[in-house]
Length: 610
Image (cartoon, rainbow, N blue to C red):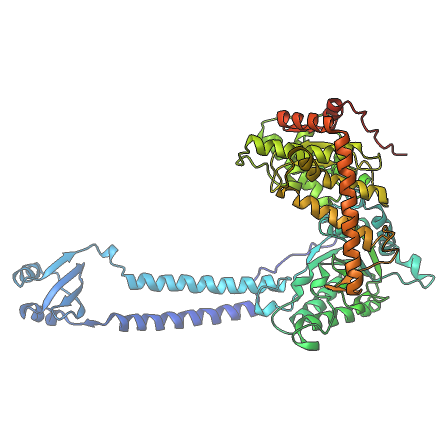
């Protein structure tokens, strides 16, 4: 039977005993020096009993404190003294006759502040040595918090038994999971590829915006492959001392080789992997030395008999050094995009399974109403809806809670401190009614209306919501024109009803101008300009001043054209505009179904997924 291994790392070895003795000698020496210094600092004169009595008879003693037979006192010139007196009752009468102030205290209270100070110094010294040894041991186990262990990587190691994530934990990102399946198969069955001489990629670069699950995907790969997982951030390599980052890279890869097959995950690799030659110290600065060491370590993978895979994550692939991206290093790039409609629905289902929701909650509709949301944004949306329901003491989280949470995330918290006058409220109602009515009356290619509100949120005094009913990968000219006209609908409604111009349409103009300029300069949708892309790089135009003037004139012409078309549309349906504005003034918020019924318009047919 194999004997169990006894962990005796806590037992004092010869080296620990030697260090302990040296520490005790140092403490004793320090305390002795402190004692001498305190004696000198106190400036106390030690006199004999007879000398004390002579000073009393000469009226040179001002006050004394008696503790048993120990006496501390002060002469009339302010100097201090100590002595030991006999047990003689006549001494008290002598002190009284010569006007000496005296007090008798218990000897137990006379330990002395200086002795208490020495004891405190001893305690602090022992604590400091214990903390120093503890920090040193912690650094030797992978920490990088002190000068003795600065070269340690500080990476967190997760054993397979502690990694609970797998591909079932990642909702959506199907294409990314398919790309990573090859890496998992190689880690599980390296001989399957080696028998034919295949070389699997050593580095995988996850590219995507923050919150889309790059770290979760890396942990899922480790969970699927059932191998150790080393996690570190790119910024952890960089130190003020040159050479420390390179040492940490060497230590990280040395640990990974000991536990191979394994996965190294470097988050935010752009912190250490930027283009070389841009540092203040030229080619010798700390960051570039760290990057050089990382490149060398990835080239040396073939020396390890077991596979090691490096997975890195970034949202700035454009700033990475080309040497990192060449074949043999991070040659497999996996894009982790914003989730599409189907993926958003899967992510929402993952997050709402742990909360109590009402049966009326439509997850598909929630997914349709959150285009451009990342996985982290969706998790925050569910949490915000749960918080709102909890504040209202509800038993379930309802669809209205999710709707309010989305408005709060997108626009900000409802502003109750703004007191609108009836005139302002009427103006905002007609403005939002103009947006909504244009959206309803345009062809079915435009995104359908969701709701209209004149309740202020964030910096917006009113909002018209439109929800895409499906994922769109191609946008037509008609759809872009509908978006421009809908944006201009608020200002046009103000012109028709009030004959006045206000500042409320500023953000609408920004939206309209951005779309029209893109139609002219990027998408070739202007017959006057043609099918040429006119781009702008790093603040500089790649076309002449004459062309710029021509572009500006065309943007102005198209914007005026869409403005006139919007005015014609609203003037032809002024009765509906006034009816919708009146409904907003009365109710402040109207859902799409209520608007269809109010205006007697046939509801928009939802898109059917095949």
